[in-house]
Length: 588
Ligand SMILES: [Zn+2]
Image (cartoon, rainbow, N blue to C red):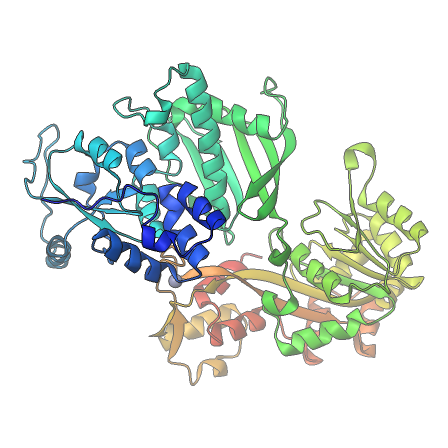
């Protein structure tokens, strides 16, 4: 059987189309990413470039990749990772497997310790780039079966490898049977292991960035080092190599070294930070350690400083009416604008969108934040440091001596901060801040409870925005019928009038595709409630120290759309689902 190989870094006819710099850059790109780089260099879609490479190298393209897990065992993790190759099932095998699954036929069972009769036929393998002869030699040492090579989309192949072996499995493979030629130099074992751990930690962070995770948690358990990401507000288990526990101490030390922490201090919590470069983006990572019964648990919070990562009101999911109400008060010369919601509801992202909206050379804007999540050009941003006495309150006091027009203070937590914020507003400043309350009217009663005089609250506060983040349906979502019973039950929980259900027989539901990793959701969208103190009746209620419920009820009569109703609007328009809304809104 003749095997197509490609022993030059690039097919000559494609190389000719690139200038010298690009040709060299693409040639030096590891095979895992070379197709992607080549497509970018040529300015053509990846699938189209893959077709050209396939034609030039004589390899067929495998479009619908189904990993052959049995055959996968033939090869060590590091080999599979380095060469980005995956044994796949033929169309007949896929059809047979699907038919078996449909018939509920018992799967062919392989008894423990018994070697299944090795299929003698050719082995189908998909790879991200045509193999060279060195690669064929290596692979020949693991199987004698003839191999039929296919090209496959690099991202799909990478995903299959992660699902099978875990993130970073190529770094920590301790199978000595296979060593790449460049590591055959007599490197001392421990040095080699250190390098592997460094590579592993980098891969875990890089994968988190590409999955758009906000946090990474390293959690030592009794028998395993568990790694989880937080993506769109939910924890996602990260598949890891089986032998990870062996490297636990080295991994924890590595993260501590990267964050400039004291690696010998294991009994006390520590905080540090890492500046991490991935692709074009610079990431600011906040690191914290906490001693747990098995070892230190380490959490990384990823703050993306990429310029295009900030949100606008529109991107946050505000409708035209909501934007209009907010834009009106953003034009006021003074007053307090508050954003409320639980931790992780995106309060600082929203405040940041407000800041960007009004940011201009005519305004002097000063902030006190913890942490500074987004840098805003032209704005004077201060990181508070309570441990040296620079609290929100003390920062705010100093900011007022700095001739500001607009002030943003990360959070109003105490009487002191609230006092100064109110005074700043009444002396002609626009003040942005956040408060930890469930709904918007609750912010008023909270400030009164803190000891601020009701008449001061009523005259200083202009607008309170309560918000939550719900997962946004991916573009793969489809309309599905919904039962009237379930719909009415859900509307009752949301305090939405049953009449709303009248003409609705179907709602968009999650499906799952590659873009959303099969979850059916991708990214998040905000749900809002806007409370204004712009009529006498509400002012009156505030002065009389009325309850949150009384304030809310009055505001609704004057047109406030309650958080729950606003969430239902997002469901109706197909942005999210009832399940998601019920999960987020009702746990408040
Ligand atoms: Zn999808």
